[in-house]
Each structure stands twice: as C-alpha cells, then as structure tokens.
Amino acid sequence: MKIKNSCIFLNGLRFHAFHGVMPQERLTGNDYRVDLKIDFPLETAVGSDNVDDTLNYATVYTALKEEMDVPSQLIERVAYRIADRLFRTFKAINEVEIKVEKCNPPMGADCEGAGVKLHLINDKTE
Image 1 (spheres, rainbow, N blue to C red):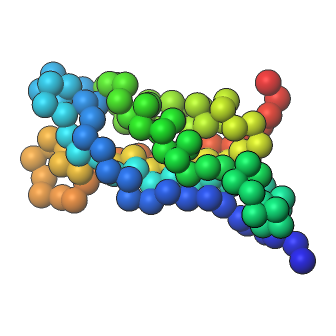
Image 2: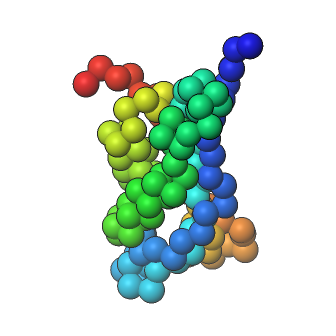
Image 3: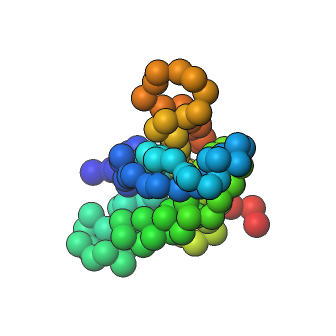
C-alpha cells in the first residue's frame, strides 16, 4: 500500500498578537486564527508508531507561537516567517500551506476576518 497526499495539520489556532500597520494595532493587538497544513512524509510513522518519525504537533505549535509573538506590520510577513522557520527546523517538510486571519480588521467593515493564505514549496536546494 502506498501513501499519497498525506499531511499534518493544525486548524483554528487562536492567538492575541500585535501585528498591523496602524500604531493602535501594535499597541492593543488583535485576535488571530491560524490554519496550517504541512506536507510531510508519513510512511515511516504509520508503521513505527513512534513520534520521532513524524512531526510532533506540540513542537510545531511552539515554533508557530514564537513567530506569532514577534510583531510585524503585515500578516503576509508573519505567515512567511512561520513557514520559513518550519522549513529550516524540519528539513523533511515538502510543502506548507498557512492561513493567517485577523479576526477584527480595522477597516470599517462588519466581517469575520481578513487575512492571507500562502502555499510554499521547499525546493531543498540550500
């Protein structure tokens, strides 16, 4: 049996962080939701039943949280930083899809959120 299109994901992670272009956003912060999908080879883990053969959710979450704690003007930058850190930390990651959503964007609209979604491929040339 072959495994195809496998991934590890963390959905609906909630944070209060201090990203934004406006000074008030960087002072009071805002609530954010993050969804993360990671293409990672799971062939060994499904047979071994050993957490060392996969991505540990807690370790991934810790890296993500540390990057969310670093203020940036743009959530595009935050999303890219998170993906970049994951690629550097876990060399076997093939792709990362990340969605960062600001829950109450200061734009005068009645909406659930606004954000960015990035899909990055680890070319592994470095």
